[in-house]
Length: 226
Image (cartoon, rainbow, N blue to C red; front, side, top):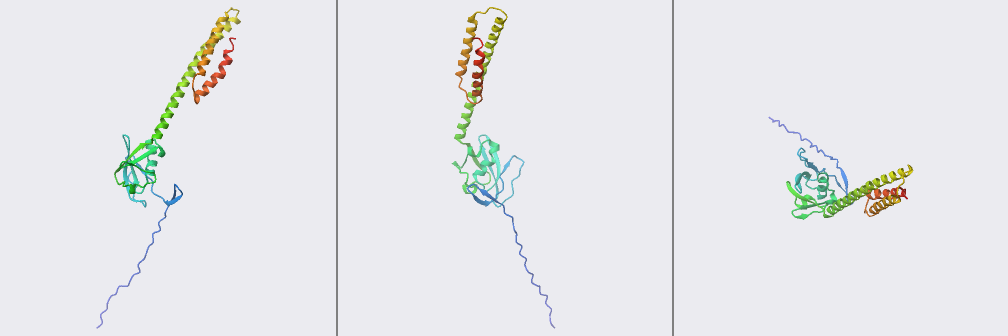
């Protein structure tokens, strides 16, 4: 008697190819590389991003003075990416930033994972000394312009008062009142002093324009007494 055997029919295994669409981006220097996920600045509400082709996402803290900025970034990000991520938070352009990790300043093209940056690592941010000097120079110039504008305004106020006196004397003369010549001489001298004071004001920008306008306007006005 023959025994019937149930043989399993071999099944052909199906191989599914996963065709992932890869995005590319042009890096500084013209190198074409696979696009990384954007750096996420943590404001307390955003969650860490999922792992990407740029490696797992890590949490790093950028310390800038008393401020601490938490970022969630792909582990293969560069220090240049970190700089760009904190521009709005710090008010410093990337070129004005210096990033230090473990006591050493890092270049923009250096990658975090190669430098040893791991999850919960801290990076120190300092302002470039050249940036500080630029800001101090801008503050100095603004202060000088402000002082010059105030000085020009002061001269203008004094000259306006003198011109009112000149107009009053001219009105008196027109009305038949006799006015001594020395009155006009004194006023003319006072006007010239104000013009000399105006010439002595060192001015730049808006203050320089104001001083120039006064220089063009006042001689025409001060010539009336003579």
